[in-house]
Amino acid sequence: MVQDIFLTETGYLADVILPASAFPEKTGTFTNTDRLVQLGRQALDMPGDARQDLDLIQEIARRVGLDWHYNGPEDVFNEMRKAMPSIAGITWDRLEKESAVTYPCEAEGDPGERVVFTEEFPTATGLARFVPADILPAAEQPNRDYPMVLITGRQLEHWHTGSMTRRTTVLDAIEPDPVASFNPLDLSAMGAKPGDVITVESRRGKISLYARADDGTPQGAVFIPFCFYEAAANILTNPALDPIGKIPEFKYCAVKVTVGGELADVSSFGGGQVLAETQAAAEPQSADVAAAE
Image (cartoon, rainbow, N blue to C red; front, side):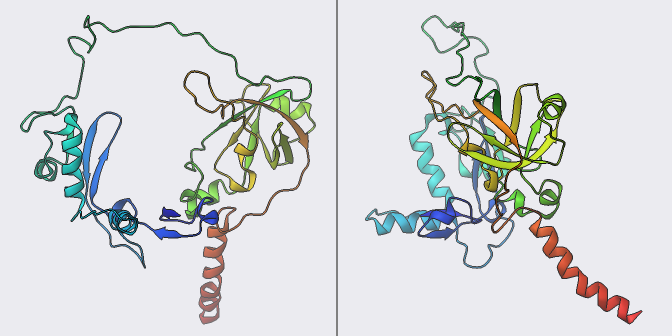
């Protein structure tokens, strides 16, 4: 079961898809890592059969036997206040008047603390403890068979898996196709030029995409954004866990690169489809105008 506003790669695998509400279509609070609790107010009506997230969650809860009866986001927030002393002093009325309050705010009327630990830290001595950290090598290192390092990350134009940004006409037109960035010297050494199709392969799989020259990419490395489902970077990445943080090692693995390959097809979004549809829709109108002239 998936609850989302767009059909994502995960959604394609779901048996049931619940049409949720987007950011401007609902009222609720958003809390940033700077501890600012902000009230977001509904500005748009939901399209089609979309429903409020809270309605969907409550309906699921009732169908599995839970007696949930929240009249709205205010009820949920008040329950959060009871469970979280750090926001106990933030009332819904205050959020409606001030729009945002910074926690900790433990009692009603407290101003909220934008800066914490101004005098001491919450330790027995009141002092912070700094621990030196050693750099641990990655679990998988380059060798003769896999001589390059794969780095994955985001593009400016596309967010995460691109399920929204690759459906946006301008952003998809700027970056429609999967690309791998190389230092120009590496690209020249392998006999490829920008725009050529190349194949990147690790011990776990391989993908084909377009080569791009980038002076900012260090020699010996290849950078691939993970927003392109038709050339999914995580097919290549190493799932080995960091022994301390238990974080998968998705940002570093050994790969080899060959010139050539077969590009995978795009499905319902990406690949410049939105722009092509817009242009196709405009052509009959242009023809009508020309005929009228």
